[in-house]
Image 1 (cartoon, rainbow, N blue to C red):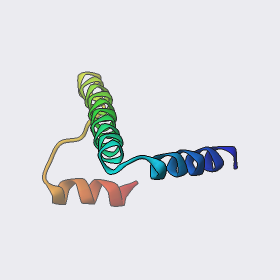
Image 2: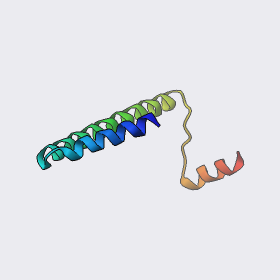
Image 3: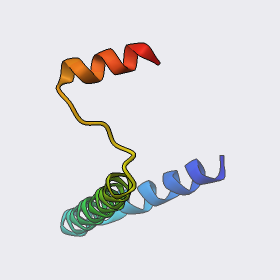
Image 4: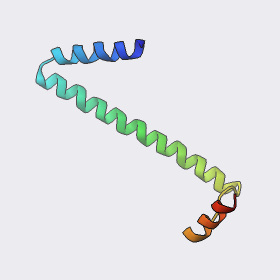
Length: 72
């Protein structure tokens, strides 16, 4: 509940700002979210590379992979 209260307070504080400042906040948050997503993708890529290096991946056609998943 505390987090939603904080978010509400932040949104109320932003609403008081003039248009240009609100736009700056929106653009800054958007850039931060893009960077966060980029970092998440990089982490996932490293995990995938490690799984590949360790031989923990399956290869084949979609049909082969579907048949393998049905066997599990």
